[in-house]
Image 1 (tube, one colour):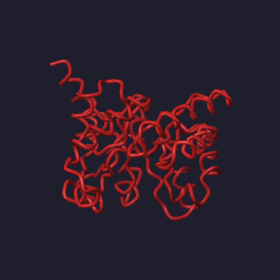
Image 2 (cartoon, helix red, strand yellow; image 1 turned 90 degrees about the horizontal axis):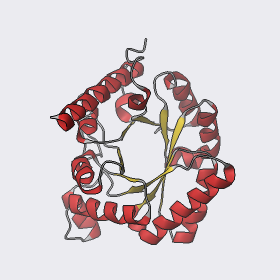
Image 3 (cartoon, helix red, strand yellow; image 1 turned 180 degrees about the vertical axis):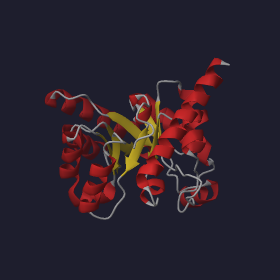
Amino acid sequence: MDKNRHLDADLREKLIFGLDVDDMAEAYNLIDKMAPYIKYYKVGLQLITKDGPRLVSTLKRKGLKVFYDAKFFDIPQTVYNACYEAARYGVNMVNVHALGGEKMISYAKEAIMKSSDKMKLDPPLLLAVTVLTSFDNRSLKASVKTALDVKKMVLALAKSAKKAGADGVVCSPHEIKMLRKELGPDFVIVTPGIRTGKISKDDQKRIMTPKDAIAAGSDYIVVARPILKADDRVLAVENILKEIKEGSDNAKRRKNS
């Protein structure tokens, strides 16, 4: 039984389930089982490479929403072409790497708008990936040879992405409050790196609970392993949805205080 069946639809859609599995059969089984509880699904590079278009088509046919997590990063024209094709699928979010620069992001935005208009579809949100959640300050500086720490890098990339036409960013939960303050209430913030108490942080270094991420101002949280590794996946989803409600209530109380 869905204990959160009375949860507002907008709150329920704040949970994006990451289909980070090894084969298509498992992905389809998960969709069938989770569709009554979860309305938003992330399709990442592994399944995009295996059979992305068919998987997206299945999700859309079931009335579900899709985050097309391809993280495009190439010269502007190539990214334009890729985003044009992605938008044709009717996805609801698509992302590019913010490090690709403002020209690349603006090309991506133009592509999804033109493609969506031609297909008579609502355009997907264009998100810019800032700094991957596998980085911390030490590993970022070692890899990129930058004087900026993670938060300063995320802010610089987010500001650049917004200027170029991105609708929002993908960032770790640790940067939510900063970005919300700097970029305003309408800039979309999507946060992976979500972990529950029983799941270790593994290769994710900048993590947070569902409740705290939503309370901090995240619009959407991406959750995969805490659901996939749970003994009872439906119960895990119900608990996450409960945390989303609690986090949303906390955010409202803080705003009104």
